[in-house]
Image (tube, rainbow, N blue to C red):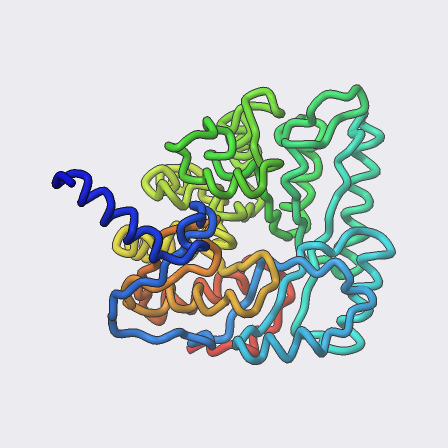
Length: 364
């Protein structure tokens, strides 16, 4: 038996000693625990009370709010902003539940159904309903990503975010003094080629319906530009770009946009993984734009909030993210100063969203 044959035989024997499951494991299942040992601890409770400006509670009219309060108190969450308040009777029901039980701990944003937008009469009705919703207690307007992606006008055409028929809505928000929190498009890799170079390959493989293209329904940049167009066209209205406008992975570009549009603010929901892999760059961005960044989480999973706290509050190194298909890399803390942290956690939201109870937060 020659040397090559002996080595091959030994290699095969070694392979046979491995558990069958390990031999057959694919990439999706491979998620190793790091052996790196660094100082640091999970931050289970925020250092300061915070306002979550990006939550979705679809059953709020009949929901037992005490269950939410228990989890919120554990996290040190002062106020939850429910962006899924709806309109009309649904919104009235949600606000009635809040007022009866926890009037200073929850607020709701109204929503508009843009499907079938048509003529000036449609616009007038939409604006009138928004005014009613604000009169009934809505503190802002949430615009879902369906505008720009799925909504069609009365003629069956894609309804662009900057369609002129919607201009009176954005203007009315400025007049009423309420912010517009808007989610436009989705991460750009959803539009990129589905191949080994796509950083969101695993997410698209496990969630194939998220894949987009320049014709499904339009190029990513076009949709994003439509959003920025309304920001510029309505300087008296405060806009909050959800998910940092999908530029958390390019803070230099986001800085340029923020400088161009003083009425543009950003929420950090669902993009903490982007910030946690560039701690020095993110720290500089947060300090520079400290008056225009708001805390938000998006999906209501209390067990995921500690990753946000740890990224924002500490200088810890190389700790795990909670969702592999969003980020297969580790996190680093960006170590924000207390005054910046307070602005992100609650001061900026108190300034932008009318009628919040400031007594819940340390203002010194």
